[in-house]
Length: 262
Image 1 (tube, rainbow, N blue to C red):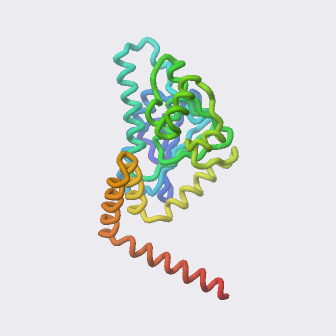
Image 2 (cartoon, rainbow, N blue to C red; image 1 turned 60 degrees about the vertical axis):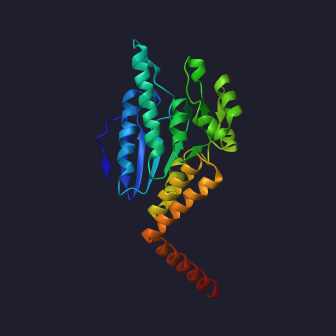
Image 3 (tube, rainbow, N blue to C red; image 1 turned 90 degrees about the horizontal axis):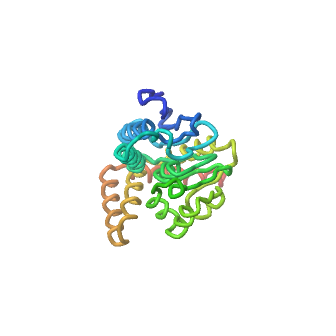
């Protein structure tokens, strides 16, 4: 099923429980403009409540994932407009981050500024080895990526990247935790499909509760985090889906034992 009611800047396709969201301004290296901000917010708000969606893949068309904010649209604008535009981008990142479904970023080529914010708003990142990350906001005379970046890679590493405008390779991004998995160029879509298939095997409620517990727990201490997990466990027990999981597990163990005996 394809949904095209969100404009051309962002495309959405849903097949067999997997939603694919595509940044679609290849002629601008997927520079983030106002229309794309609004479309991202709308599509992820739709996906949050979509009963037919189990997992979301976020990728981009063209040679770059996202070359950062589209500064051309700011020509002739006043500070008030720029402020509203930045608020729209924050709302888009938040919609991605708050989506109850697992969201996996599939990145390639240049990931610059706002592109990094989009990727870090996802649950984790799978990157082609040809990917580079850069956070040039201070060098562009603005401020950005000061919060998510430090939470992902640490304060000192974030400052070094922001202050110097240095490009970070995919291999380095993997080492410091910005990227969860690396794949060879040309294999990114296949890797994403494999990840989505593995996630979709798990019961939707347990995945949603796990995501919620991890995210809420990251904002507090261990004691409160355990309470958050216990609340998630109670909700999961009330649903009864855990019984199906136990039955499936026991069935797979018995099948494996039969295979060994045979």
